[in-house]
Image (tube, rainbow, N blue to C red; front, top):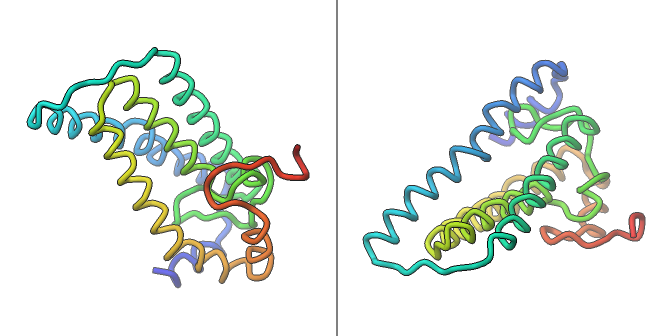
Length: 178
């Protein structure tokens, strides 16, 4: 798989190709995954008779909107600056260390995590939040075991230095930005 990603990373894609590739990616992460979580959490809650929790709607909105904005900003940075997409078969052509990537190395995962947690809070479902945690942990394990090695191979010392100075998941204002 690593060799395939390296091969894909050497190919330049047109703006149109990258735009078309974003459609299924956005559909998957903004609609399909949360819908699957919704169905599974409803089934789990019903089967185990789990109680709902109540929280003010603004808390859900406080998670959903910034989460979508942060994830979207990350996609934009990969598209515009890196000349690629989040998909391994159309990776960035250059290492992106600007925009949200100046604050953490995985801003897209951070944003999608906030978005999904916001949906779980809005639903008042502990099982939805549990599914989000399992999903995010599995993404982070993949990033640590596969993606970071691939990025190091593609971008070498530039990535190693970026990795040293930039937090893994939780955004921290960089000296450059704040």
